[in-house]
Image (cartoon, rainbow over all chains, first blue to last red; front, side, top):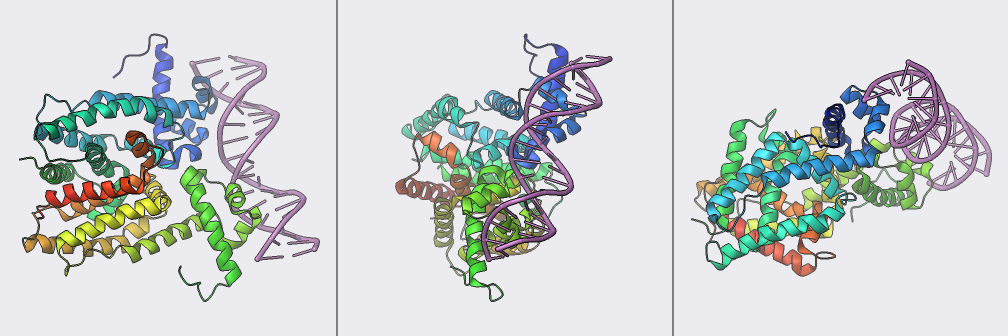
Length: 208
Length: 208
DNA sequence: GTCTATAGTTAGATAGAC
DNA sequence: GTCTATCTAACTATAGAC
């Protein structure tokens, strides 16, 4: 758990966390525009006016929620570094992404919904911090290619391939579950996903 | 263009098409819950009440729109058949999917948004027609594996990989464009996507 | 088939007592 | 920090004249 900001009291901190959890479910169910503060309050079991006490407006709540999600990701995904071998680095990256899709699908879905609807809130982020972070990842893959450790692949499209194929199991889970004719994916199913994606993507990059 | 239903007059048919086009933009911008009939009417340049004349309610309009999208897809994606070689069939499938992402991204986005938000409308479809169609595709890949034409891969996860990696360029286009530091993707960019995905996925399946 | 008027609901946000 | 009451705006949907 992240430590509370020095500027925020504990009650405030705790209540905001409760609201974030409720808001996450509401936004993932109805999208940003369709989400209602009334239902968020009901989910959080607090009076509606309290949400306005803690957050300026719906957009402010949504922005802070997205910001939290991105903070968590930035901590978890520093997997691709030049000092690692492509096989280990890519395997670990694929596994981490799939396990995130399993453990916290709602974060992935909220992010996906924001992008699909044109990223009205995240556009600035995409064109600043995100692009900067991405270029670091790209340069690692370029280095691997130059050193002949992997085939000549387009680094951007390889990254998009890994993101999309792993996040798919969070974002499109209803379709996956219907396709597999199951109630829900099991731990074994997710292991099978990791195995399948690792097999195809690594071999597809000429690794091994 | 699809021929007008016999039961529907030409005026009705034409007006519904105008409404569908307007609704597509509205739903893709705000999601189902966030979309407003008032704005759809403004986009279509008709009186708001006319939408209620042609459609029972917002859900009815949305369902028919989704139904249209799926109809178009069913016509375009009968690419995987047993009589074709895996290399040609998969290459053609990847290309068709990428070009669809390029030419009609909004259809992909509306479908994606519906799934991300739990498929309240499409759940029945996913568990009936979709699953049936999918099993046909799966059996083609299984046949290829049995004949030793491709590596032993999980057919479902291979299909998910192709869907997710190609649809990504429609659904997450804002992120892609930010990553590539461009205003928009060009025809050449999409050709590069086809080449990259074909290279990695085919080799990843042991083709060639 | 079209349009105006309006009923009925739900929404975001704030004021002010506690 | 909490809660009730309330204002204002936006929305869906329908009725009924043209």
